[in-house]
Length: 208
Image 1 (cartoon, rainbow, N blue to C red):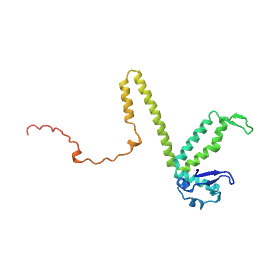
Image 2 (image 1 turned 90 degrees about the horizontal axis):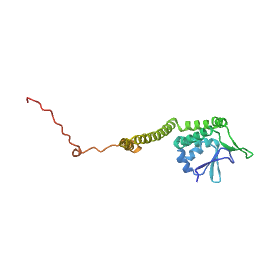
Image 3 (image 1 turned 45 degrees about the vertical axis):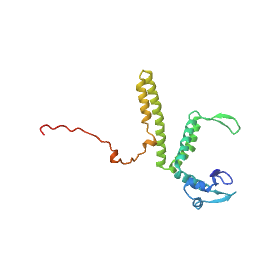
């Protein structure tokens, strides 16, 4: 069951709230408080909020759970970028297939895609947007380094340095930084009996 649904009838740009409890978890606000700030009415057991209420739901959702929204923005940008290269196949109103031009697709992005993306990013907040971009860049860099190490190991093996290649591959895997080993670990203090004893030879002093 959907939590809420964007409606076109009987009111355009309105939103039907099917699951108030589920929506509260997404927007971080009691539905009663939301309804107190916008126009709404009941329809078939659901609460139908006005277009202004729809914008409020989206903005609250961006603030409360920004990462899924930002992930969608990135995927949407990738789709626009792909379309702006060769165009895309589509169908006209009279059912005739044709190919859109890259210029038309780019103009569509400027008029519709980019304003929406920037608005959602601003609602999600600069901190969340920056974190999402850094995370995506870090994941891409890890993939690039993995491919580079694989190429390096293969080249070493092909040139007769199999032992060095195996050492590099093993070290790279064993010393990989993961969320599990990146997190600071607070160790238990050692008991006196657990502290290793270290012996050092003192230099002899002549004449004493």
